[in-house]
Image (cartoon, rainbow, N blue to C red; front, side, top):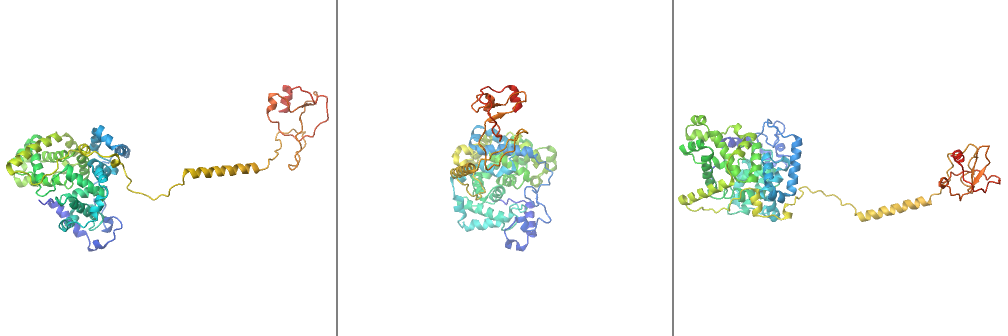
Length: 515
């Protein structure tokens, strides 16, 4: 396999090894790996976790407003909750939202659903734990351990030798060699797994790596690298239609595609582009498949070699290769690159048509392929239709489970409430009834007797003006106004009068006098 690291990245790796101290392996695993190595005191991480290096962002990129970000998160949560319906009935809307960019808080979960890793994980429950518990092939284990410190050495997750990130990366790569022993391990798989680990746990990253290696880029990491050579010829043929100037220049100087596109395609541009652009490319790549990788390569070739002025300045094979190794930052900027990718007229059908042509030419010139890779699936929808999931496979399981005490059953709670209500009622019944004095008594009424010896209720006595005689109304009077309970009066019974047993009702004057 060709060495996939360029000079700039090799220098970064050596720098981080020089900065690291000898006590790195003996440090505790508490805290982040950057804290262990003392980077927090003099160096700041960017929003993606990079402490330095070529992929650290300078903060000049404009972030989305929080309101827009919250709205997109709500939309993605709804899609993830009804993933099968969205993928089958409204996939164009899913594609559009991937092109706009997946919200950072949900990117890991969305990648797992898009790639089909979620379904694969649920259908092979416990498989990763089984592979993780095995020692692994010593041949591959030694190679993997040598490559761990080369993967994003300026990212806080992988900065510490033997830290959390490197341990999980080793587990994922070792598990894949056991899962596909006929393929083993390829150096280009390490950055793919590292990008996944930045966004999800080790088990999810493993199944995401499996899907990328088997469905999106089948045969890329197999012995002989025949699939990547075949895709190089496909890229060169598509370049003839997209940028004839760049095509003729590369053909003139006999620059084989394998010389400049190997790292691009095998690492899915994770070691070439600025990190903000890497994430946007991966959002579209996991949604629409390998055609996005072809589009990115075509955009870079067209921008760097698509004008006559640039071709005049780089006459020769060496000069052209140096140009492609140092792509201008403006062409890799997130906004510009995404717009150009969406405008490239290359579809999945074009890729498959050219793949058929190049495969036929390969068999004619070189014979049959030594490694028969599975067919390539173009995008999340095709993968889902090829392996229909069960409803429980798409169920979102919580990643953090807290031990919360179970609440008391509602039935017992209802019984307790009934008992307390009965107690309150019995207390109310046992309380003595107090004789409350009339707050509106007349000035001529005598003071009320002691509450301990209440008198018998006397007949109601109405005092009228001096011009009218005293009238007593019996308790059986049916006048509507007398249905209201009369205020208790503690007046002693008056003497018998001729009108005491009268059945006449009170006049309005008498009522006004009473009230």
